[in-house]
Image 1 (cartoon, rainbow, N blue to C red):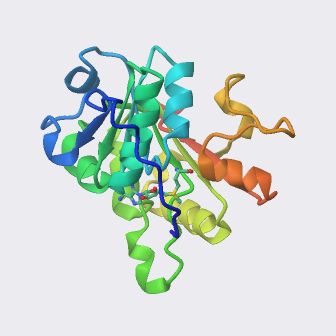
Image 2 (image 1 turned 180 degrees about the vertical axis):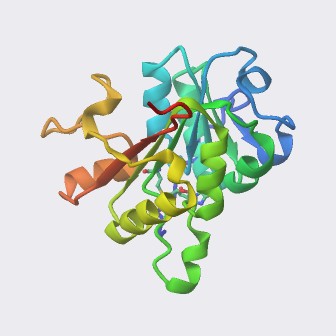
Length: 225
Ligand SMILES: C[S@@+](CC[C@H](N)C(=O)[O-])C[C@H]1O[C@@H](n2cnc3c(N)ncnc32)[C@H](O)[C@@H]1O
């Protein structure tokens, strides 16, 4: 993704409570290990500038939110946003989400997983780098609690359609995806001049340029009627 230079968080803002490097993490990632309580834990993969984490953590004080961002500059930027609003229930990890899904997060421990506008990796030979891939979706299903949700939004139709198809083959237990409304983050979601809400920086850009966004949510239901 082509990126502009990011402002670093100001030097007098401590990121100690809001930023962890992957090699500083506890062996097992739980609410207790990260936040010292047992609140339901939500994970965002690819937090970018951290807008969703900042909004969702303020809207849901009864949940903890963990963001993972592979670009250290963006992880710092997002952590700076959380530090500025003195968030006590959100934190950024600077690193790759995939090994954390594979090894560090216990099964049936996540209340929700959020992936918004993942990098499309257009070229055929690069598609294996996509964060939504057969191994990650199998892991996501394993890590969610019963009734846990997986939110996937993108403006890339081919990524959307091929992911939906791939999930139906790899994790048929998820069942069909449920279309999700842009407004579903609630009344405190950021809003632009036209009155439309947005969840992330890329969502805001899509709204501004009237680019269609494809939004779905999967619900893990271990007991289907
Ligand atoms: C297109 S941006 C979208 C950012 C944000 N979700 C939004 O909607 O504004 C995708 C983000 O995912 C991050 N990313 C890509 N692969 C990742 C991985 N394996 N683990 C964590 N973050 C990743 C990228 O660095 C980038 O910041």
